[in-house]
Image 1: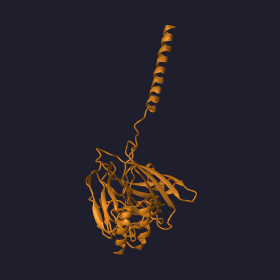
Image 2 (image 1 turned 120 degrees about the horizontal axis):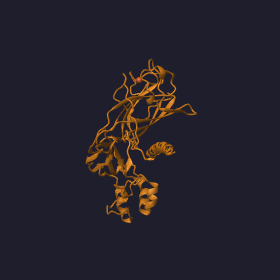
Image 3 (image 1 turned 180 degrees about the vertical axis):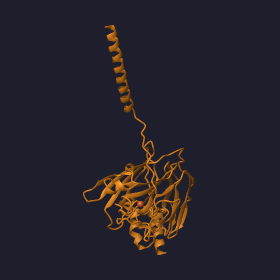
Image 4 (image 1 turned 60 degrees about the vertical axis):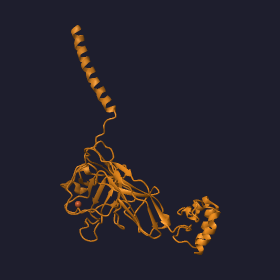
Length: 351
Ligand code: FE
């Protein structure tokens, strides 16, 4: 009996040990585990890589199609987002041809992920060409990551089975929308090693005074890990390049044909995948704007009504001329906009 109990007791102990192991495993699983993301496999760049151009996330041309919208994430092996990762993309057009002959830079570009390591690429389903299944080429680089060259594939493509480069781990998730367009998602995982050199602005832009129609240039310098990009802001609003503004995402901003409404505070941010640093603000003062209350760049009779409004009702002026500067009604330069500016304004108009 006792031996039997012993045997049962021993057996029970073994069961308890096994249950304890199960419980321990469940306990471990319930802990906030350190996330592990598997590094994205690299692939050959193939024969059609060139220095990517232009900087854009929209590769669509006319009515080529069907449209593909690809939502991408870039993370490290702990699944933490890698901000401002440089991404190059290139793929064949709808007929399966690359831009090897003019016009160049079709279905080819570069861009940076946002602060959350995310991007959205607007393009089309690449066409097939002999020997390959449907695919898109990518290169990705961030601070202290090796340059990743890879390709993404599409699910349910018959040619996947016969393409020697095809890797199911590089398949995007793909949804076909009711209008026939496709929406894809993929998470790129880069190995990040060592420390992270956060940008540090080492040279601030200088304040400037420019006459109407002149050119203003703001420059900054920054140290930190590369690749590095920049973003200039006026009064906190990000600038984009246009006919008069260039270098909005470089370390040197240039504004030509300066107008009264360009006056303001300019800051530049240096960004890389480790973080960002912003310069001190530099003021742009535009001369020749006193009396220009409709901010069209000249002082004439069309400024009479807005001048009258600026003197009579500041709030109403701000609403009526949101882009303009009420300070331009301070024609006598005493720091106030009031009735004492009326006579000097009339004199200014009279020339
Ligand atoms: Fe290719």
